[in-house]
Image (cartoon, rainbow, N blue to C red; front, top):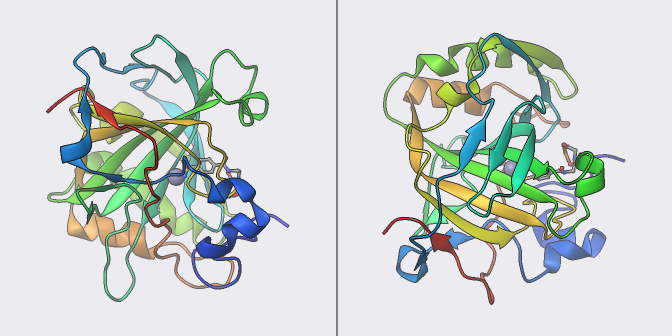
Amino acid sequence: AQHEWTYSGGLEEEQWPLEYPSCGGQKQSPIDLQRRKVQFNPYLKPLNLTGYGEEDMEFPMINNGHTVQITLPPTMSMTDSDGTRYIALQMHYHWGGGSSEVSGSEHTIDGIRRVIEIHFVHYNAKYANYDEAKDKSDGLAVLAAFIQDYAENTYYSSFISELANIQYPGQTTTLNGIDIQDMLPGDLYHYYTYSGSLTTPPCTENVKWFVLEDSIKLSRTQVLKIENSVKNHNNETLHNGYRKTQPLHQRVVEANFL
Ligand code: B30
Ligand code: ZN
């Protein structure tokens, strides 16, 4: 069946490697981004996002039981510093919440977890589609951004109000009149990058990660709505959908800022 894995109870993260061997590999994500150990690479160019600023688009949005996911059109793409182009497929969120209102980002910076983390999942444009790319060693790239609570962000209003229509797993809705570029941090120039994996099963180790330094600002009220609007397959509010940070092993994290 789909989504047999969980974050707690059942096939929880310590047991993922039993069913999905890659989850026990040496290049897993997320990781703790330790500023002191990051390798400064002044030759890393800014990411080039194409089609992200398109207005008046319609985006399908689903509660898939472990996150809220928005389908992105192939007209959206990202070109990295090497000139490799990746086509957008979907974006989704990882959050904490619950009674203790814990932060729920997947990557941490110097051990500190941010409130929410957004993933923009892309596949290498040299492959015909995601299915062709998903098992290739150079198949995927994820652009990650953090959400912090700070002040109301009206660019997130329609996304947040649509959550009420996808309370239950399998429910879908449509996001209208949003501009994805507006939902990103202002500074798209400064990022961390490293080689890792999908952060959920099958944990395939073919993801080039780009984690933005700047964060998206939402109000506490908006954060609470994201954290408390959707339910999982057990009819419980979906909380704490993030994986523990994984060992770095032989990898090096690079950044284009100090
Ligand atoms: S992430 O960005 O590293 N968190 C997948 C894509 C991105 C990430 C993690 C996983 C992925 O494609 N997983 C396989 C597909 N899923 C279906 C789905 O999209 O929602 C199968 C599944 O997990 O069992 Cu749930
Ligand atoms: Zn993710």
